[in-house]
Length: 64
Length: 402
Image 1 (cartoon, each protein chain N blue to C red):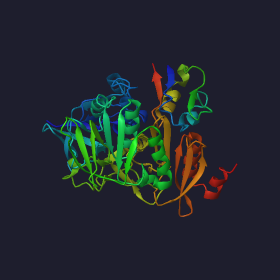
Image 2 (image 1 turned 120 degrees about the vertical axis):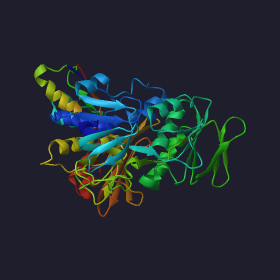
Image 3 (image 1 turned 30 degrees about the vertical axis):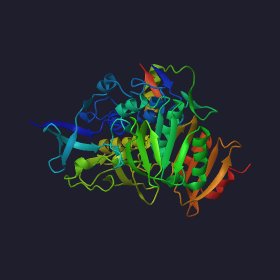
Image 4 (image 1 turned 90 degrees about the horizontal axis):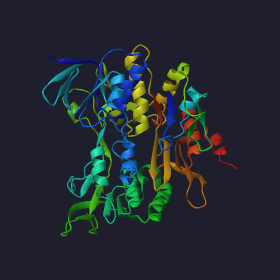
């Protein structure tokens, strides 16, 4: 499974960073960024989906 | 035979879809059916006046969910299916085709419809913007050398004007208030937003309203203002606000007053009926006023609370968000948090030298009521947190002292 961020939509709420600080970080541009290339281990998939779903801007997508 | 669904959701836009998905994330196992009056799969509505009109997005790129996504979540979306009546006693919704569907829990997420200008019904050359089809139609006619008159300088009108300039159209905006977004943000900020429009060659006609939209005698349209001024153009776009889509509830007995009236748990006035998104009016515990919010983030967040309150009726959650809305215009990002009002004391606490960035605080009863930011997202987010935490005003002001 792989995460991606649509930067145009991100409003920097930080919900994803709060829920999965090992997968997301807040950038100096005040938008969320992926840590690494977005690939998620199977064990972390559900948590990653929860973080993606929590985004009020629907800026986080999940492939696979 | 009457059809039935454990949860029946009326409206297949973001509030409806997020409610359905939220239920599944809470391990709700019952049947979920969404009735959508329009023909399309769920799409990204904020993108209509942004990406679609500027030509940067397509009908495909603004789709939010595929049929496969919905199937995977076991959400049945019925498109082209319009609800026309509700019987809260029998717990059934009546459809336009004469059939009915029973529910255990009902979610009203029918959204809002554009307010119409009586002098300007939709017709060729006169546009309203609500649906994907509206946006695609409008996109096809705002190219240069089109002359575009936008009626209303609120969010939609301002974004349409900005998008049309990207397409090199020549744009005039007519607004009855003294400044763009002036009704919400007041003159001090409105004046700066006027400059933003004018710096891109948009002509603003402020303090004027439209009394008629006729033909110019040469195949175009003629907009007549209340002072007799005429504006000849190729395209008129009307963006003067929206009203909640509640006509279908007129005989339901449900309490409706500029939206479906709900309690703080988003429950309407009949058992097992909820509302989410543009259509819901509810008392936000963070504020002393009933609210109805026509913005994306609210629809997403309210849907989450409605899903929780359906799945966990014994431990309902109150819905107490800090309202948030953003707008993209002329390459700038505008953001508003809280409940700013034109009559608040407005303090400009940050202003970029070229007018390209700005932060304004809206002070009411000695506290922060809301804030506006132009190209200052980090400041705005800090203010959103401060509003949620009810941080004292002097502490907030201190963060702006260098």
